[in-house]
Structures are given as structure tokens and as C-alpha cells.
Amino acid sequence: MSSAASTKRVAVIGGGILGVSTAVHLLRQGASVILLSERGLASEASGRSLSWLNSAGERSTPYHQLRVAGIDRYRTLFAADPSREWLQFGGGLMWNAAGHREATEARHAYEKSIGYDSKLLEPADIASATPGIDATAVPENAIFNPGEGWVSLPDLIDFLMEEFHARGGELVLNAGKASVMVDGGRATGVETAAGGTYEADAVLVACGAATPAAVAPLGVNIPNGSPVSMLVLTKPVDHNVKAVMNTPRAAVRPNPGNTFALDHDWYEEHITEHTDGSFTIPDDVVQELANEASKLIAGNPDLKPASWKIGYKPIPGDGEPVLGELGQVPGCFVAFTHSGATLGLITGELLSGEIMTGQKHPMLATFRPGRFS
Image (cartoon, rainbow, N blue to C red; front, side):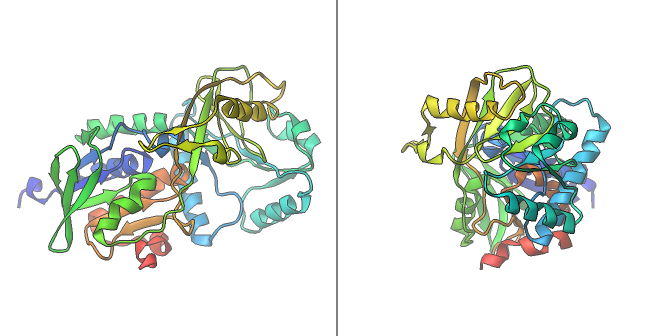
């Protein structure tokens, strides 16, 4: 049998980090890959993710272990070229609102109990731990996690797509809605709203918050808890902030070009979804978020929003990742998770291995879509 005849053909639906990462890992293992995106690459959640690389706080042990492995893969990528502006490890800093000192202390104690690097700081200690923060914004205490980082997912996707093309991957942009073709109970390819038909030996559905709707026609129920969210990018400003900040009124991370990426959830009630699927939010609400972020930064620079994107933030109904093959439709795999940035590289690695070998990876055991059956 020729090598061409034995090459596995995989169709990947979704041009975000989970789809692109898995596609590249499949190509590395010798698969023939076609990647289909409804619009452009990083046009949905990956294009508006705070993309804070962390496993802070409390979650299930398997989820924590997977996130830690995810951070490890980013560290490997970072070590290959620490000068990349779009991937940095400057730690994470979080604090609660006034009156929640004990909650912060309890979170710190939990993180320490599982070996997660966690420092409990008084406001006066912050400057010595991480630069560029206005400590007067911290009402009581804060947690600094030195091992955390951030990534700009559009830049990472561009980086991975260079390898995708070099390895002969096929890319279909603006494909519209895609559906999984099934014959004899097994996935056999993808059909697009634009009229394209692409046969494949296996299909991965990794289209963010739209994933549950994409597999529903297959008789698969995946609860969807995805809320509407927004990411704001600011205009450039001089600063020396290194850490990602998660605070009561703004989440802030450095971004390439001396800009900041901002998000939170308090403004969700101000977002309007229109019948055509678009979203709007008053400009003054966007500026209010920028003003809240300014209070956290030393010197309180005048932050001006340069752009913002609104859409659904992928979150499965039970909060845990949904990763692996559909029991009802062999050959069809899904990747649906809140922590798409942190899990982006490790998910692509593990899922591609399962798709190519048929062997299930033990780290994904509790995340199977069959748990909702």
C-alpha cells in the first residue's frame, strides 16, 4: 500500500486557536488536513480573548492538571524565542473587592495546597513583586502568581498558520456555516453553506460557542453556557506593566505595541444583540471600562479604546472542557472549552493524537462529550 493511500484525511471546522492548533499537530503527524472557517481566522472568540495563561483559583483536579500542561507547552514555545512580543510570562495579579480579605486568603491557601505558585501580598508589597501597578487600587490584599502569562491569540494563530501552509495544509476561508456529513453512522466529511463538500476520514468541530449547535443535528446534546462578552484594545500608551490583572472592575493584560487588552463582565447588561447576529454597546460604557483599567496602572494613564469586539465567550454548560470523539458519531470529534487560550496548544496535541491513533489520552478522560448523554 502506498503512503498516499494510507494518509488520513481530517477536516477541521473552526479557525480559532483550538482548530488551528489541532490542524498543525495533525500535519506534523502526517495527516492531510483541510481547515474551514466560517469567516476569517481568529474571527470569533480567539479574536476577542483576554488569553490569560493560568490555572488560578479552584477547579477540578483533571481540569487543573490539563491547564498546567497547557501552560507548560507555552513555556516551551516561549523558551524558543523569549523576544516574541505576543507571548510573555509576567505573572498574574488578582484582588477582590473591599471586605473580602478572607476570601482572598482562602484562595491563596488553596493554591498553595496544590503546589500552585501563589504569593499573598499587602498593597505595599506589590511594587517589589511586579512593576507598573497602582497599589492604591488594591483595597486589602492581593495574590500574585509569578508563573502565569498571556498570549495574543491572533498573533499565535498567524505563527501557527505559517507552519500549516509550509506542511501543505489546505485552508478554506469564508466557508459559511459548516455541517458534518454522516454515512452509515460515521462522520465522512464536511458540507458548507457556501456549497462545498469535503470528504474526510475524521472531522473535528472546534467552532467555539457555536459547537453545541453544530453537533445538535447529529443527535448530540452539549449544554451551552456561553455568555456575551467584549474585548477592548486600547491605543498605545507608555507603561511598564508585565502582569495580567484580574480585579473587581477590570481585567487587564499587556498587548503588543504598548497597548492593553481589557475585559470584564459588569457591562454585559449594556450589550444589545441584534437580529442579524451583530452586537452593539454604548461608547461611554466602553470608555468606562478603560477608565476602570486606568485606575490600576501606575500614573493612571488616559486610556482610550482603539477597537472592541463583542460575541459569545465559549463556556460549556457545566464549566468543564468538552474534548474528544462523539460516541454517537464515530469519526467526529469536538473541542469546546472556556479556557481556549490556556488549553490551545495542549488540546491540539492530545486531540490530534487521538484522531490519528484511535487511542484515548487519559488526561481527557473526564472531558468526554458522552458525559451529557
